[in-house]
Image (cartoon, rainbow, N blue to C red; front, side, top):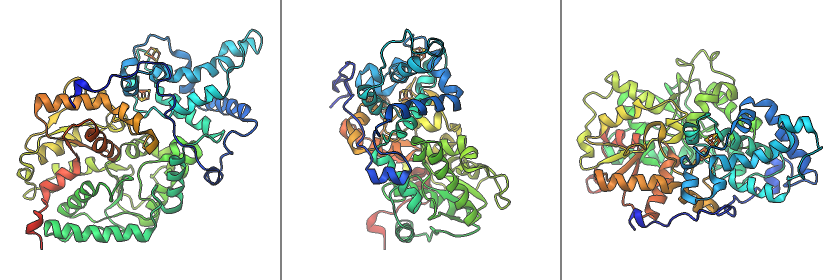
Length: 486
Ligand code: SF4
Ligand code: SF4
């Protein structure tokens, strides 16, 4: 199906209101320390949580106060472009919170009290809109770049998710992922034995594929690198994960993962500050257990952005950890880029291994707009691939389009919303395929990889999807054809 014939969005208010996450089970809410779904006094609780959020976050009040309704943000949001639903514009989404803000918390509301106010508008209909539309935003922050006042709608989305949690309105998949991390160190709930067995299997696969014996240790103390993987690794995206092992092997660095925390992304951020800190603190605790020289975050968009921007707040800071050579976490692309500059891959790197592959680079939102990385992945791609492409202008750099699946939208029941959110990016990729002849997409976020792999097949784009370290690893130690393996 050609991109031009993809269905146009419905362009109707409430067109995607029925696309909502399945709710968390009562026992999961209890384990999270959150109230049952919609307790009898839910209105008071919700307003109380709203008031506390406004007191704790000046930026939230500013975002709700400052909007002048100019509409400049509307075409920035992939979910509005994909669904056509005015509730899915950044303004429309935040207006769902502004309704309550203006009624209960604005300076005018405080001045007037209840006198002269319209009827109370906090009912189950409004709550249903919150449940739907604050989970149809990936917190990608693209709208911030289009708003003349710099309003950051992701602040509103995150605060409203926290407020919803205070009345037991939590998506089931987020609750399970969070509890999985507290129970087994990862959102999939994999026990340490399964994690270790997977790493032993990876060593065998790497030996068979490359002829090189590469270690994939688990829970080793004093390694050069403690790697914190993305949630999908090392299972569904093992090619990228093997790329990390190849980099460490080529550079002569020892590395390990921790069974206490082996997931970089932090689902606590969608539940509340206490839950975000519980996961963030695990980074520090895992580090203290294993005492590595560097903490390195894998190709995980949210995991990197949260640890880089909020790590000190959530985990308490690393300054006192004497064994750490770097007191800040590094992104794997930063580390590999430094190694490349220092000549660690000299004589090993052969970009000819990727001859015939012409990838276009999709920059993940969390990396381009919140992660402070841009040159490092490009330097690695330049070294690993003979020809790679930038996204067609103006979709690149800080303006990169969202894949539609980050920010906790990775639930099966949100499949249609994710496809709608992906559509603008899929159109840009179809253009890159048609005009520039790209054959693949390369990115540096495991969620983008999953979403693009599934979504581009749906849209009929014959592009394969890869990680930056998958390509770098291939250029370092290419996989031998199956018939040439022992
Ligand atoms: S943060 Fe991204 S998904 Fe959310 S409203 Fe803004 S542009 Fe849309
Ligand atoms: S661009 Fe900014 S001020 Fe204009 S409608 Fe959007 S959020 Fe409001």
